[in-house]
Length: 240
Ligand SMILES: Cc1cc2nc3c(=O)[nH]c(=O)nc-3n(C[C@H](O)[C@H](O)[C@H](O)COP(=O)(O)OP(=O)(O)OC[C@H]3O[C@@H](n4cnc5c(N)ncnc54)[C@H](O)[C@@H]3O)c2cc1C
Image 1 (cartoon, helix red, strand yellow):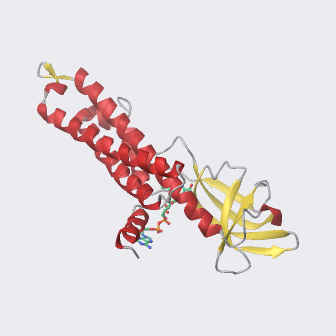
Image 2 (cartoon, helix red, strand yellow; image 1 turned 90 degrees about the vertical axis):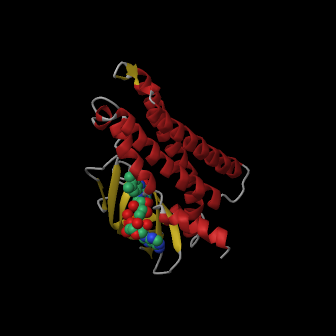
Image 3 (cartoon, helix red, strand yellow; image 1 turned 180 degrees about the vertical axis):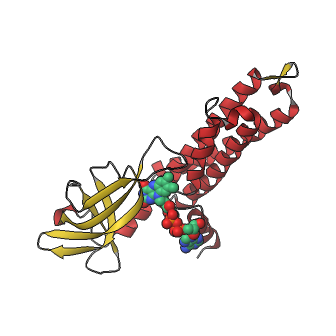
């Protein structure tokens, strides 16, 4: 909540789960101003103020190459000129950002799925069981075929959403579909990769599959949980 005070806003509140929130020196905050119901967006560029209390969140399951933070704001002062865009348009800006972010999360999922497949193919050719590489076993081949097929389908959805975005079209449904399908695909591929690597997949010392297994789960949570794109798709399909 921001309250006007001369040529500044005074902001109080708390935000959990912010990628790099513990180290960021600049940020955009969506908040209400003077109790009005609509959201506005403020740019923070002075995080040295005493009322800005940021901390790193500990023991994150995956995605550990990036930190996540929580921020508490106590009487933090923001110049009025730091209002991003027009007052009261914050929700529109947030939704527009999320549409773009969904396609990005979907692309991340394709990356995780591709790595899982690549690692699996390489390992299956190398790993010998009962005198032959496990890649010669049909059970392993089926898993690889299923992974490759779903990966290709997900990649197609991501490219389509990205092309539409580049053309300036409304991508809320296509980006949501790409995000849903690709994140599920990543979970499937990582799970199959774990099966192919078996014991060597479960232990991080031996393969990256353990890391991919932890990382992929965030794809169903961040940038809005899975349920949000489902709502977006249902709204478009049903035509509400
Ligand atoms: C690794 C990671 C990084 C993140 N980074 C950021 C970031 O940089 N910036 C940021 O702003 N957030 C970030 N988030 C937060 C993330 O966007 C939220 O966790 C997510 O939006 C859900 O909010 P919540 O955790 O409060 O769950 P809740 O809102 O408490 O939801 C709990 C459950 O209820 C369901 N639910 C809630 N409301 C509805 C509804 N109306 N209809 C149907 N189901 C519903 C949810 O889908 C979920 O299953 C991050 C999260 C993670 C895990």
